[in-house]
Image 1 (spheres, one colour):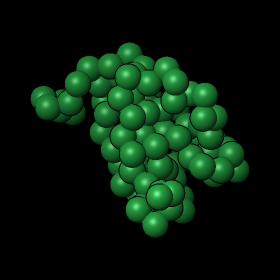
Image 2 (cartoon, rainbow, N blue to C red; image 1 turned 90 degrees about the horizontal axis):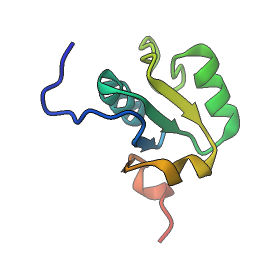
Image 3 (cartoon, one colour; image 1 turned 135 degrees about the horizontal axis):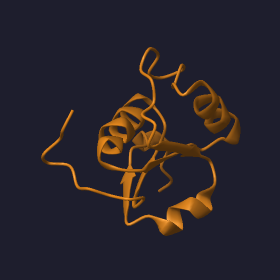
Length: 93
């Protein structure tokens, strides 16, 4: 599958928020290179990474091989692009 409007990347995109929409965006961008999917909780990151599927929010959709799942906030520093995909009620004022 090819996405003409998606930028090519080696590792510069992080999707901040691992709900259904964040997982779907990570999978989309992973067609073009490595993408980091950032979770707030380490347990959730481990669960998604081990299953290679977000069973809580996007069951039945396998993660692309280029998606790396983490809860390490330090991973954000290496990102060229950060997509904030967190529900507004969880974003501090």
